[in-house]
Image (cartoon, rainbow over all chains, first blue to last red; front, side):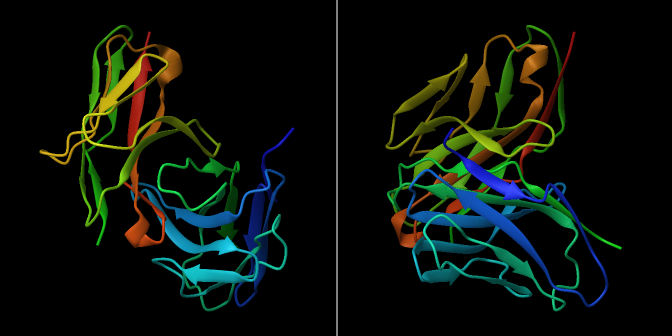
Length: 114
Length: 113
């Protein structure tokens, strides 16, 4: 079945540690996105990539990093510089950058700080 | 910049009640508008969309009309079911924002039997 797979479902981070969230899609989509979801705040864009080997900062990129070495994969690293990392992280993809394209979402990763 | 504002939640209704969730937007260009739904512990799924003024999106009994004059995209359903309990997000997407999706805050809907 085609879709987006995020892993792990739950992740714990120790103080000062970097952690990486995985996002893989087999939909052959060009564009991929990372959103952060906090209670009562909706979703905020962290990073997005419209093509392999290229990505742009979203609204809250500080403390995060990404790579897009393969079309299928868009991992997100939460660095020690992110002081409030506890949130639900959602990865998404779309076929193109056309404005009427819908986004397909993964099932999310809940990150918590120990 | 682009922004989306949803009515404050949460919303609690009895089964078969009429639902309205208000959504208004600010955009510099001509965005496409979306409603996404999120069930507990899951990612978001597209519920419906409209791509130009006066378009009506509809799916699973839900409807929303793209009103450019009032910059609104209110979600409605005539008779809600317990299974409609979820968080609903209004969103917009336009070229001038790099085709990113901008979300509202989300509205938690609970439908009681």
